[in-house]
Image (cartoon, rainbow, N blue to C red; front, side, top):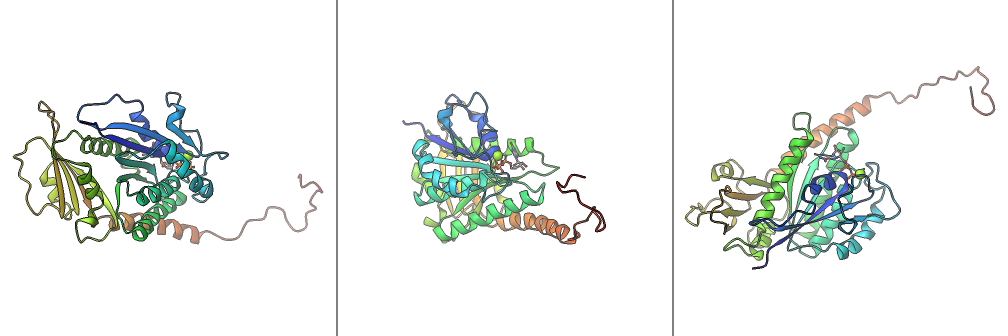
Length: 320
Ligand SMILES: Nc1nc2c(ncn2[C@@H]2O[C@H](COP(=O)(O)OP(=O)(O)OP(=O)(O)O)[C@@H](O)[C@H]2O)c(=O)[nH]1
Ligand SMILES: [Mg+2]
């Protein structure tokens, strides 16, 4: 049996940092072989152990300085050549932070291309609101995904975490890595009764249910009790150890289950749930933060203080 390959595109600085944990990882039984691709507008997040053939750095630019439109033309043009060098796998992940200028922009054009090819993918997004600009970029990232999903009439599945003072980067990173390992487990192609088409329909749930395609959230759960606390998922991909595990009929609109082949495994059951109803709240929370930044900005004095008085003589070269 052919082992599954999971392509992980790490886009922008945070994307590269996160995907770096899987650099040159030896194949592990029960998990898809991970094939990382590091995509950015600068080399500042690359480390010496990353091979240049695993990278695609946009030509003639050096970072986007947190401005999404700084390099968007270069990025849009580069996506097709990038995909020739780093083609999509049977399943794909796009990992990035929404707060910067590069990761979210590269991810936007990449998602567009993956959707056009109907290549199944999940995006893992780190939202940021430590500054007005980061918050605005995070909102813009969500709006872009919403528009893309609407115009293409296909769902976009987002595993979402947010950097906050109480959820520091390291905690966010380990939650994102848990999602990566879970997706690598369900896409292993070694699981009994789980086909590639099952996983494609898990992502594109609108093919098999009447739920309209929309930006939807990914939740990884280990028990059915955890699932029961969520609004009803549109779809679940379950990876179980025991074929006798009872799967109640009302768990989700679409459910595909696979069974681990590794008998001695004490790995927990996995339920990867796609929920359409929670992302509105994610958006509302960030938007509230953005409105707060806007209020602060509006309350600033628009007058620029003048330190050179009108009766002073300014030297010809401006040097006081
Ligand atoms: N959790 C987590 N957050 C990160 C990490 N690196 C950066 N961030 C956050 O992501 C935001 C954007 O940073 P980057 O991902 O480096 O930005 P970029 O996509 O490279 O975009 P530009 O540098 O503006 O071109 C920062 O403001 C940080 O808050 C990381 O490794 N983990
Ligand atoms: Mg950067």
